Length: 132
Image 1: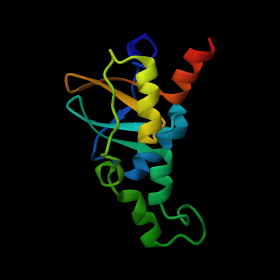
Image 2 (image 1 turned 90 degrees about the horizontal axis):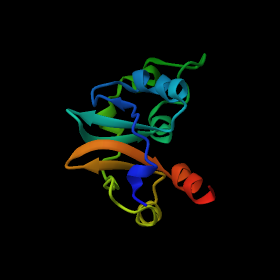
Image 3 (image 1 turned 30 degrees about the vertical axis):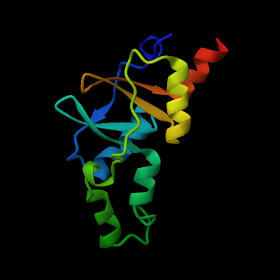
Protein backbone atom coordinates (compact mmCIF):
# COMPACT_ATOMS: atom_id res chain seq x y z
CA UNK A 1 0.00 0.00 0.00
CA UNK A 2 1.40 3.45 -0.88
CA UNK A 3 1.98 6.24 1.62
CA UNK A 4 -0.59 8.32 -0.29
CA UNK A 5 -3.32 6.13 1.24
CA UNK A 6 -2.47 7.08 4.83
CA UNK A 7 -0.72 10.45 4.62
CA UNK A 8 -2.18 13.66 5.98
CA UNK A 9 -2.93 16.13 3.21
CA UNK A 10 -4.14 19.00 5.41
CA UNK A 11 -0.84 20.69 6.17
CA UNK A 12 0.18 23.42 8.57
CA UNK A 13 2.94 25.34 6.83
CA UNK A 14 4.85 28.44 7.85
CA UNK A 15 7.04 31.04 6.22
CA UNK A 16 10.79 30.94 6.86
CA UNK A 17 10.48 34.53 8.14
CA UNK A 18 8.08 33.84 11.00
CA UNK A 19 9.57 34.42 14.45
CA UNK A 20 9.69 31.82 17.21
CA UNK A 21 7.24 34.00 19.11
CA UNK A 22 4.77 33.60 16.23
CA UNK A 23 5.47 29.87 15.82
CA UNK A 24 5.27 28.88 19.46
CA UNK A 25 1.48 29.17 19.94
CA UNK A 26 0.80 27.26 16.72
CA UNK A 27 1.89 23.96 18.26
CA UNK A 28 -0.77 24.22 20.95
CA UNK A 29 -3.42 25.78 18.70
CA UNK A 30 -3.21 23.02 16.09
CA UNK A 31 -2.20 20.23 18.53
CA UNK A 32 0.83 19.28 16.43
CA UNK A 33 4.52 18.58 17.06
CA UNK A 34 5.97 19.73 13.72
CA UNK A 35 5.68 22.76 11.48
CA UNK A 36 6.67 22.60 7.83
CA UNK A 37 8.69 25.56 6.58
CA UNK A 38 7.67 26.20 2.99
CA UNK A 39 8.41 28.80 0.36
CA UNK A 40 6.38 28.77 -2.87
CA UNK A 41 5.23 25.20 -2.22
CA UNK A 42 8.77 23.92 -1.75
CA UNK A 43 9.75 22.37 1.55
CA UNK A 44 12.71 24.16 3.11
CA UNK A 45 12.75 22.60 6.55
CA UNK A 46 10.88 21.23 9.54
CA UNK A 47 10.58 22.71 13.02
CA UNK A 48 9.60 20.50 15.92
CA UNK A 49 8.21 21.67 19.22
CA UNK A 50 11.53 20.45 20.70
CA UNK A 51 13.46 22.76 18.34
CA UNK A 52 11.47 25.68 19.72
CA UNK A 53 12.09 24.62 23.32
CA UNK A 54 15.83 24.41 22.66
CA UNK A 55 15.88 27.92 21.19
CA UNK A 56 13.75 29.83 23.68
CA UNK A 57 15.17 31.03 26.97
CA UNK A 58 13.63 29.23 29.95
CA UNK A 59 13.17 32.65 31.58
CA UNK A 60 10.72 33.93 28.96
CA UNK A 61 7.38 34.89 30.55
CA UNK A 62 8.77 34.64 34.08
CA UNK A 63 9.62 37.30 36.63
CA UNK A 64 13.30 36.65 35.90
CA UNK A 65 12.93 37.51 32.20
CA UNK A 66 15.45 39.97 30.83
CA UNK A 67 15.76 41.60 27.43
CA UNK A 68 18.19 38.89 26.25
CA UNK A 69 15.58 36.25 27.14
CA UNK A 70 12.71 37.87 25.25
CA UNK A 71 15.08 38.39 22.31
CA UNK A 72 15.13 34.60 21.79
CA UNK A 73 11.52 34.90 20.60
CA UNK A 74 12.62 37.04 17.64
CA UNK A 75 14.73 34.35 15.97
CA UNK A 76 13.29 33.29 12.61
CA UNK A 77 12.01 29.91 11.46
CA UNK A 78 14.82 29.56 8.93
CA UNK A 79 17.36 29.97 11.75
CA UNK A 80 16.11 27.04 13.82
CA UNK A 81 14.58 24.64 11.28
CA UNK A 82 16.06 21.26 10.48
CA UNK A 83 17.26 21.19 6.90
CA UNK A 84 18.64 17.65 6.75
CA UNK A 85 15.29 16.22 5.82
CA UNK A 86 14.18 12.66 5.37
CA UNK A 87 11.37 12.73 2.82
CA UNK A 88 9.35 10.17 0.90
CA UNK A 89 7.26 10.16 -2.27
CA UNK A 90 3.54 9.43 -2.13
CA UNK A 91 3.94 6.26 -4.19
CA UNK A 92 6.43 4.76 -1.69
CA UNK A 93 5.22 1.70 0.18
CA UNK A 94 4.37 1.94 3.86
CA UNK A 95 7.01 -0.62 4.88
CA UNK A 96 9.69 1.36 3.03
CA UNK A 97 8.53 4.51 4.82
CA UNK A 98 8.93 2.65 8.12
CA UNK A 99 12.54 1.96 7.17
CA UNK A 100 13.04 5.67 6.40
CA UNK A 101 11.62 6.65 9.80
CA UNK A 102 13.90 4.26 11.63
CA UNK A 103 17.05 4.93 9.61
CA UNK A 104 16.54 8.68 9.72
CA UNK A 105 15.71 8.73 13.43
CA UNK A 106 12.72 10.98 12.76
CA UNK A 107 9.05 10.89 13.75
CA UNK A 108 7.60 12.69 10.73
CA UNK A 109 8.16 12.18 7.03
CA UNK A 110 7.24 15.00 4.65
CA UNK A 111 5.80 13.61 1.43
CA UNK A 112 7.26 15.35 -1.61
CA UNK A 113 6.30 14.68 -5.22
CA UNK A 114 8.08 16.46 -8.08
CA UNK A 115 9.66 18.90 -5.65
CA UNK A 116 6.32 19.93 -4.10
CA UNK A 117 5.12 19.16 -0.59
CA UNK A 118 1.91 17.11 -0.84
CA UNK A 119 1.52 15.63 2.63
CA UNK A 120 3.09 14.19 5.74
CA UNK A 121 3.11 10.82 7.41
CA UNK A 122 4.01 10.29 11.04
CA UNK A 123 4.95 7.21 13.01
CA UNK A 124 1.44 7.40 14.51
CA UNK A 125 -0.13 7.21 11.05
CA UNK A 126 1.91 4.13 10.26
CA UNK A 127 1.21 2.48 13.60
CA UNK A 128 -2.51 3.18 13.15
CA UNK A 129 -2.37 1.50 9.73
CA UNK A 130 -0.71 -1.65 11.09
CA UNK A 131 -3.10 -2.11 14.02
CA UNK A 132 -6.27 -1.69 11.94
